[in-house]
Image (cartoon, rainbow, N blue to C red; front, top):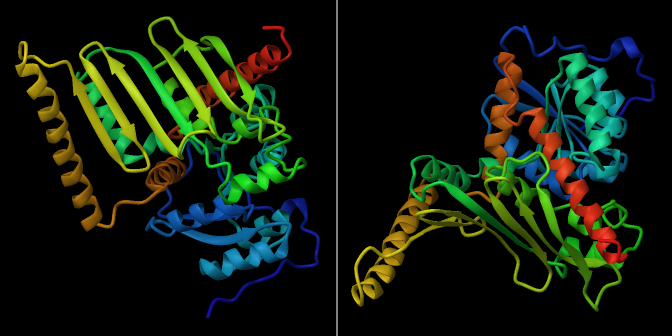
Amino acid sequence: MTTLSPPSNKQASPSASPKLQPVTGQQPKSSVRVAILGCGQIADAHLSQIQRIKFAETVAVCDSLEDLAYQAAARFNVPAMFTDWREMLQQAQPDVVHLATPAHTHAALAIELMRSGVHVYVEKPFTLDVNEADRVLAVARETGIAICVGHDQLFDPVWLRVKQLVAQGAIGPVGFVESVLGYPINGQFGKLVASDPNHSVRRLPGGLFQNTISHPLYRMTDYLTDEVPTLIGGWERNAEFDFPTELHVSLLGEKVNGTLTFSTRIPPQRITRVYGEKGTLTVDFDTQVIRREARPRLPGAFAKLEAPLQHVTESVRNLTRNLWRFAWGDIHYFAGMKTLFEQFYRSIMHGSEPPIPAIEIRRVTHIMDQIFDLCRRQEGGQA
């Protein structure tokens, strides 16, 4: 039976906090001790994916609300729970802490955790804005502590396959990327946000969008590499709600352009299309399907047969791939999260660079700032 250890009433002394060796030059570790700070909905995904990693052990969970910490520990067989993260560091001695608290707490907590000597994985959005991101990343450099952001869909099996196909020249040089996010505003979490004007998500600088658009955005910036592309677009309000729920932005880069769409008016979906000179790759993250399309090579009426044949061939490929993954128990909604965790932990164990470079963390945060600034100016008639 799992024993849950509530926090001690004693104050943790600064000297009692675990001090890990900096990433650079540290001795290789054989396993990683992980703790979760923040036991809301996304913590379940973290805990379930950590359990799938053989060289990782979840040693503690922490939340200021004791009931949340208790239920997370009980359901995932975590040996210790806390309501004070400093007590957690002192007693559980984690190597890395996953920060799954509301976004407005990320910067301050990440800085304190790194100064306490623990590596930090930060759920998206990384920080409220690029100024906070700069402060967090500066502390990571100063301390030699590793930090990673939750851009897990970059490591989803279907996205890795898309990148492989692009690298192999399947669609030629990329010229345009389109990302669409259909948001379930009437879903369990969406209803909470919509019904509470004081919800932490509603109070973000980018509102509802800031909590989610990093996912479709960083898939675009994988190919749109400009520091800050030219932006055109804005957000709008659905008549049913008193806050913006629709966003459409064009990103114009030097070599690659793209569009980002967030909508509550369409079915829930996570789709990205990568357009090249020779064809298009469409990836559906929910169905784990990749569709490759190319202009028919046959002339005249034969092209009308070649195109549907291409679709059939792609369907067979997707079915075969997903049957194989299903047979091996490898189809998971958060499969990319597991891969990102593994790579981050290995970087800690071996003293190598984290899987997502600091420059990319900053760039995505900066572009999000620019998008929200554009939207506010556009809404105010200043754009």
